[in-house]
Image (tube, rainbow over all chains, first blue to last red; front, side, top):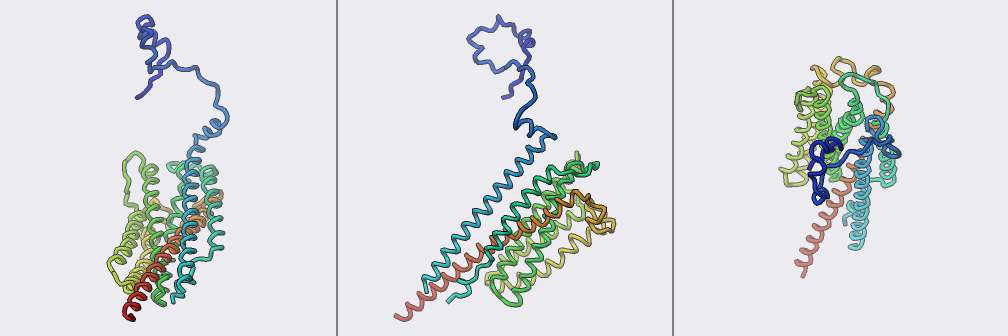
Length: 93
Length: 252
């Protein structure tokens, strides 16, 4: 569902307040646009710089870290298998 | 019994760990610098020039991987040691993966850069087509392997095929594409990445990137070789157990 913001004065001309009983207003999905906020702060300010390139960087880094984790975990599994195999073979002798 | 199985670890662990740390570090740095570093502002290319750091190393890696694969195939023909066949196979497998990534990244790059708005995904750039042919040749290597049941015959025939396959690589990736007009550098007769082709600031990201991806290839390849070798050892083990069982049965 798309929520379209409408300005409060538009809303009033489109549908006068007296025609809207209180019993339905709780179900309204339209909302009155907030006044323009002040400039973003903190993390938002950093991530929004330079055409939001930092957002892309963050995504790619997350993928890379995920792949690295996979690499390390697979190494650990192979280590374990090799150790088990060695023990198994030396038990036979 | 199986001394060959028990003693061989196909990799030097310390070397592997060092390489793993180095690759993780350098490639992370390459990603950060690749996104944030300064690049020349060029028409058409614009920011997509950063793809150089990621698309081109795929091909360097493929070339290195095919050479590694061919080296082990040659060694297999000399010695007949199973590990050589395993190494040749796994190097070729990783080569195919990097080649596939190279093709796909190249398609996306060209589609939205030189062929923006045309809907052309496959533009029959000579290098693109030749690379596809090379990948088919290496795909044939695996089809051939799967078609032969006896391990020693399979190893030998696949090794010979692999040596023929690697000979086509420089022709398909270097020599032929340069005879034709292409999006890729080098068509003008000058070697790619000559003094003027690559801005100095980009070299500091590009060269480490190539080295890091080569390292990444080596890590993945080593993993696969170790796994394949464990499987091999288990198979030998099983065969010996079966043989011992038969021995017992005939003794009693």
